[in-house]
Amino acid sequence: QVQLVESGGGLVQPGTSLRLSCAASGRTMSMYTMGWFRQAPGKEREFVAAKGRNGAITRYADSVKDRFTITRDNAKNTVYLQMNSLKPEDTAVYYCAADGAMAVPTTVPAYKYWGQGTQVTVSS
Image (cartoon, rainbow, N blue to C red; front, side, top):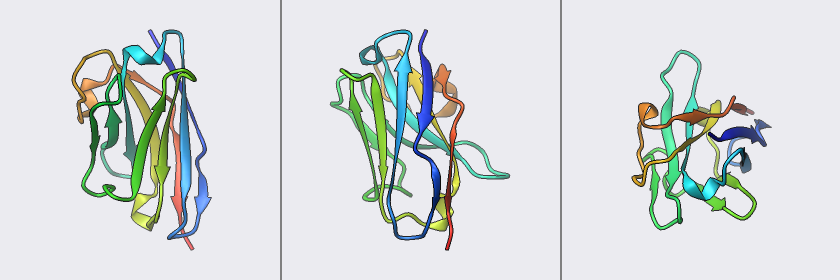
């Protein structure tokens, strides 16, 4: 079992950047595919980005491709989401997720472990 804690959220202006972190504990993060999801008010939770165990496979939602970058540091048991050129529509609670499967899934049900989320608000 792995516990996940997100940090780094906040209120930022459009066009700026923010980096989210997710610290994993309990079991080594290298055993898990790590993903980021987000949920805006009144909307379903949606996939943002994911990176496989050894980092060889990375997936992004079309809406964030070329703006967001997911990285992982298995030695620090931490995964990051660098968000650039933020837009008001990026406003949401961002969740870190982990799954022990070898695949790199992009759906909510595929992930077994979840953090509590961190709020990101993009507004002028």
